[in-house]
Length: 419
Image (cartoon, rainbow, N blue to C red):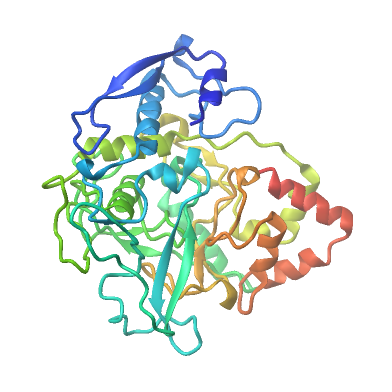
């Protein structure tokens, strides 16, 4: 969170606190702001804030937000367990101030002769599908794409984390309901759930989930909805992007040097450190929106809402009371959709195929500088038009968009760009 936003937060009395468990060593104190607002409620700052806590959180939640925010932006070093191979050294490198990027990762996949269909034989990539170009500790050999024309290399820009607690809170039954309704549609829009395996160790703190290894869940997070919960999302990123191990993901990923540890022997971070980062994500607000009636009507008319569902109902028992039992304004159906050849990346994530992507939540778009999974679009309109590739479920909607009058065209763009 930017210091400008913190200092301008009306009604917040910010004191400097010390939080343990901030580094890999977990006994190194790191100063973070601990807010104690009058009346135990937070006020949303004036202006156009982002990366701020949900309005109305209590003292304990506000304190947890700032603690997690500090850890989220913390740069991890070799003595914290970084590496032996890694891609980024802080969560904030790929989700700066809760927004999109600027960091990215490269993915690679062996594909068939058409250049997009995932090959059944991925043996050319013995160390997985992520490029890890940086070395730490005793690492000597990076994981790079092989010089092979059958290996497709693509980019994934770190997605925003704004409002992701709302996504985690959505009822499974809501996601299944929308999938069933789309299955009955007579047009091309037929989203489906990505059923994924819980691939982590159980979280000792069962506040948000009690999932067990191997349990089948509904995927929600990641560009192809390959992960179901925010604590696993956090542990997966720490391990996969930084080589930072945790009790949820205690092992180093396979690497050419065969290293199974780093300069910090054993597991690098505590479960508490993972959960604090995840709590920050859960408590990050959806930025304030302006209702634009004309553009909203066109959004519905063009069937954009079929995938970008304006609201989904949340669990009445979700542990964050402000997110429990509400209509979450997330503008996503949480489902996988076939976006056609042009956006295919050759990757399989869970049940998601090369051409399938989870509907991106339309949250905080006005703060983004690039769009789509790889950042190839530099405007909202460019991103919309790229939904029309060969075989895309959205092709008919994009044809309708291109047929709009200039006034309607501008109204729709204004609405979407303001979300």
